[in-house]
Image (tube, rainbow, N blue to C red; front, side, top):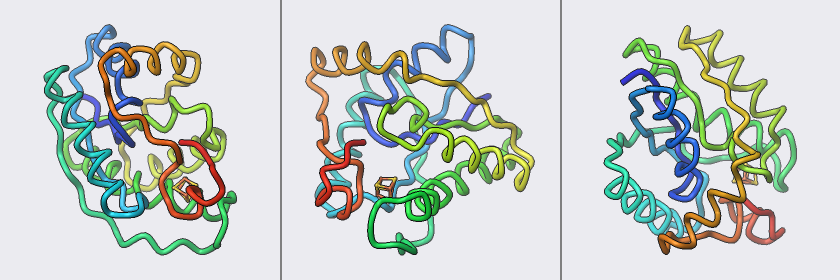
Length: 171
Ligand code: SF4
């Protein structure tokens, strides 16, 4: 493996995976998303990823993280920054241990706080010593959605936490 990819859901890995493999990279996917509420939704997204992993012959690893305990009640830089760090820290640590680079499918979403996410990923690269493989995959968003629809992959309607569900904030 030369890149460990934190994966937020089955849909969001489709196009990044194709691009990384086109670059000749060997990819391992990491599932670490304690922010997804309720538990049934977490499991549904994980099942969707497992379906994609079978179709794409993608190896996966599940990583542990601290429990989700956000510092602010509503989606904001503070809350989402905490949430990004919570998920990317175990990813970057494993990448450092295995001599790989790391990245995240969150860079694919049009709805994430992209600049904040990038600054946190860069901080974690400095802290852990694992190189960040940064790609702005947002231009591939529409193509990935349409592929997911054709494949019948579950498409969630909110980012992940209960506050994002209440606010109708997309992933
Ligand atoms: S809105 Fe999304 S990124 Fe922000 S805290 Fe909720 S799940 Fe995390």
